[in-house]
Length: 510
Image (tube, rainbow, N blue to C red; front, side):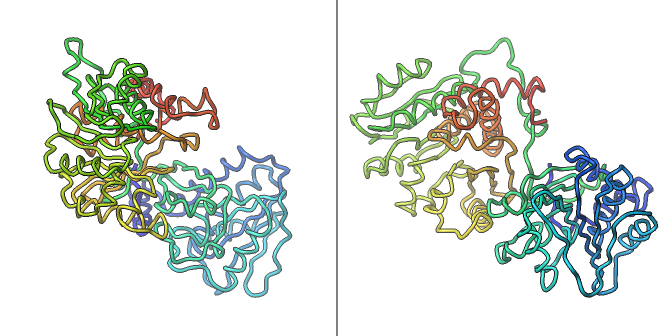
């Protein structure tokens, strides 16, 4: 699913009206009906609902929602239209004319002085002050209105986007001066700002409402930001052919584990095998042989000459993917071995965890990363590699810059894991849940991505596919374990089921 920047939304709306032979007011009615239906599905007609509308088309949406709710038997609807400069958009004015002809509706048009309504935690407030077309932060009376709404305790539903929040970048705007929504109802596609952690408390729950915007126009308009769904990854996955053997699905060399951290190698190996790799060889500290061969008997074990850590990363056999990092530590000899590997590795490569920490200690190693290397840092690892970032917006911008500069794929892990390609395109993941914030989940992801590299997927596809399947496996596992009880081995165990669900269209994320 494409994520469009705010300046293109009007272009899509105009194309929809032209293609479907409707006017903008009819499209507004369609949007308002979708919002009203969502409100009706959540609240009884006895609910007090306060609608706050601004002077633009977002305000027009809100006025139309108020009218529809009133027509549907919601008699405790109070409407405030802010027309402080005496100029409404055409469609907002048309919706105003419809509203004032209705008998019994509580309507106030605010032109100068404003006595705010009493609001409590028992009330619902519909925010239609400003939408994604906003060009500057809320000021003056609108800023004070936003603060009043936030302090009221009312349940806030924002139409399109919370008023005061920009569709893309908000790092220089005070969150205190934005409306904080409990539910944001957006149309057709999400906004980029929905994917940054700093905005989570402003957006609340968000839901997309389908208002049949023109598909042809949306396909035509380019964007660097996309949300990955099942329909995007399904074409990449094919049922296995009958006349095949294990070598048809690739060999993975997994360099992982050290004293006290052998579990990381076990989890990565399980994730790799459960995601379809034909062969998996774990190279680790010599002491890990019994652990790995007992916990993952399907994997082969290649002992390092050192008892406690990896001191040699020489590749002795032909492997279709090499994964390095889970639990290897940052011993100087391990870092030396990694440097040698980076200089000589010809196989598709994925680096995670301590491999990234070793590089952070030796930044010059970044310049010798093989082209199309996949790295999978969490926030802390990313900042150690590329410098401290003030917020998630800055971190994403830095990831785009670094992916281009080093010609690598960066999997920036988080709630909406972002896979950043050297082209500058960013793929946000739609699967996963808070239960996956658990030790070892990243080790499993390393194994999953390595499995798809070994099966011949291009690195950018292996990364995007691996992230989606890893998240879906977590979503399937959490139904059995609950978020508090989910552990990394549960994620690994569900990877095969997640792949099957996608192929068979069983996925809940369609």
